[in-house]
Length: 105
Image (tube, rainbow, N blue to C red; front, side, top):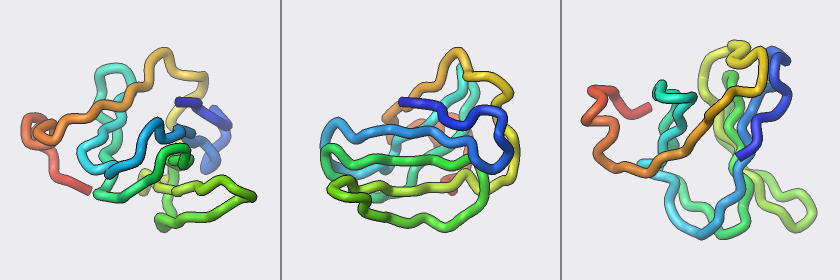
């Protein structure tokens, strides 16, 4: 996972590449130990790029040359990081939202 355009309002994003095909459902992003984002039920293929922008927008998929890129949006305009964060993680847990008492987005 790569954090890109740190400190640039509206451009910050996380870039990931799918190591295998399947659904993004129940995959959650954490900044340190703080819950940040949950991906919707969306199918990706092995090798696809998944980009999570830290701003508003509509989910879309584009193909650049031979690479498929899926774009997701956090839903808020914010400058989330001023420097590259120490720890960003993606966690798979289908019960996590219930355990955290959070609603799915």
